[in-house]
Length: 232
Image (cartoon, rainbow, N blue to C red; front, side, top):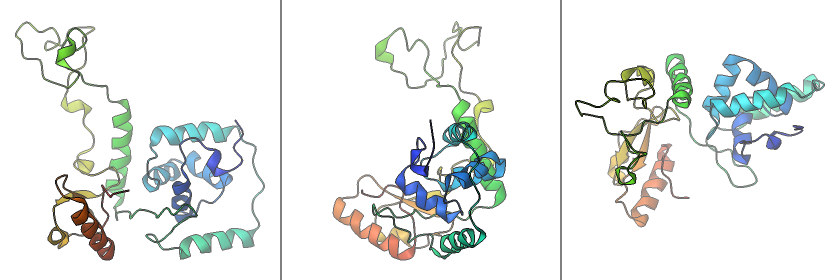
């Protein structure tokens, strides 16, 4: 598969191109160099919406087969970087009308914890309740086995895995949204007061009507607060 432009990469949406420009990546060679570097790959994962470690690993494999492209002239490279820096974080809009989402201000320790949590989540098995495959009425939702003769509870061989503390992610990222924000549930405009837009994001309650949702979203935009469940 030949990768000529960024849009040829699987899993890369048009809105992600604007997010890549924010971190100084505007071409396929620049992205290839970034995903080859562990720190660069981590920065890409944290900056792009809807892109995880598995997608970045796939890009790394696809871009590894691409021939090295000639470096851009220094003047053009400087202009591209200057344009990327000049564009504001929350006001970048591409031709499709996509606005770059607000990002939290994270320290290095929290950013590393989020990246590790994403990797651990990809390896974590699906926990299903005992004998979910035998009786359809049980469903697959997890419930701890409690029978005194339960072989799953005794963790014998060839039995499904049980929820255990060892499967957990880093404590530093516990309770954080995948974007890095700490969620705050709001039901009205007054709930936006006291929110720190650098570290907190709001989620509108499910019982809030459409008219009030619009008012909350408009006020949040004025305050620079990200709404996690915006109306499309």
